[in-house]
Each structure stands twice: as C-alpha cells, then as structure tokens.
Image (cartoon, rainbow, N blue to C red; front, side, top):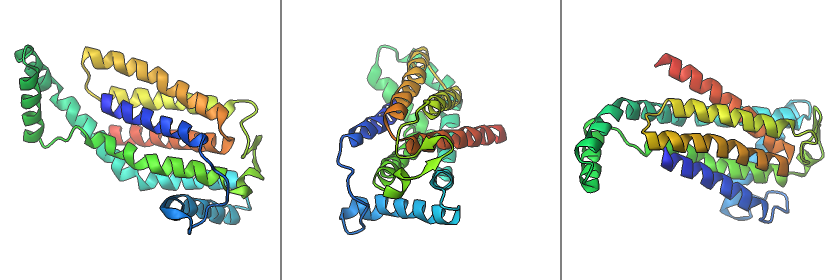
Amino acid sequence: MRKRSLIFLLILGLMLFSTGCSTKGVPDPNNGIWDRYFVYPLSETLNFFAKILFNNYGLSIIVVTIIIRFLVLPLMITQIKSQKAMQALQPEITKIREKYKDNPQKIQEETMKLFQKHNVNPLSGCLPILIQMPILIAFYHAIMRNPDISAHSFLWLQLGQKDPYYILPILAAVFTYIQTVMMNTSVATTPQAVQQQKIMSIMMPLMILFIGITLPSALALYWVVGNIFTIAQTKLITHKK
C-alpha cells in the first residue's frame, strides 16, 4: 500500500510541476518524443471525436477518457488480482512477523519466499498507476495546448478556464475518496497500514481538489469521468471474484 500511495503522490507532484512548465504552442509531432508519441496523438484524438460529436469538446473529453480507461483495464484487473492475492497471504505474513519480530532481515527473507511460493508480485499493483502517469500528464498538455478546447464550452464550463462553481473539483475529490476507500478495503492491512490508508484517503482527495480548482475545467472533467469509470469497474470486478 505504501509504494502505491507514494506513486500516486508522485503523479500528483508531476501534475503540479507540469503546471509550471511551458505549455505554449500547438502540439507538434516534430517537436521531440514527448509531443510525437504522447501529446500530439491525444490532441488529435480529441479533435477527431469532437468533429464527429457535433464539435463538442466536452463530449470528446468524456469519450477519450473512457477509451483510455478501457485500454488500461487489463492492467487494473491485474492490480485488483494482486491485491486479492496479498489479502489472502496476510495471515501468513502476520505469522512471519510475529515469529521473527526481532529479526527484520529474516522477516523480509521469509516474506519473499512466501511471495515466490504463491507466485505473487507485491509490485504488480503499482503497474497500472505507472502506465497512467505519462498518459495523464500528456492529457493535461493536450488540453492546455489545444486552442480549440479553450475556445469551447460544455454545460456551464468554459473548458479552458477553471470551473467557476467548483462543482467538478468537488466531485473529483469525492470520487477520488470513494475510489481510494474501495481500493483500500480490498487490500490486506496491518494496524500501521490501516492508519496510513486513513491518512492517504484524506490527502489524495484534498490534493485532487487543489489541482481541480487551479487547472482548467477540462482536466477536472477528465478526473470525474475517469474516477466514475474506475469505481464502476472495481465494483464489477470485485463482485465477480
């Protein structure tokens, strides 16, 4: 849980860092690897769906968000399976910690043997987050550097501006909290991990809220739709297990 939380915070940190980076200029496929393989394809994908959706960039963001979530769905399934496997092994891990409580090196050694015996990789749950990190940051740049998006509105939003009523940032924070709680309840925990999860379940939504009220509403729209999708898919997957 600790490593997954740190990675999530790293994503948010990179998001905040990217707000201070230069985002001027329309995405150009000839402008380096980042633009060519990340920002430009996403920007063109947004333009494509906007054209077939009656020039509506809000709907385009929703469609592209769902497509991205479907693309990383296999990774999310892997993450949930990894969490379930860790949960099943928790009683054995607890026994190892109690048996070798005065020997941290032995605890680590026996725990790794347990993981190998049951073919469990404790880091596999972090893979979906690592995959989504460049996509999310590229999506931010695709939105910020696409002049057509900033010139369009959706519902009460001017996509290139902040949400004037803070509705989307608040929703993004609420859904992030729900998603965090759902993911935490599927992971086996120690008393220390329980306390850490409680802290992270508060910190993550607050950071999302801060990002949402400082960045364009188009990105907050992405967060809300993405979180709703993730909550729904997590519920469906866990119910099937």
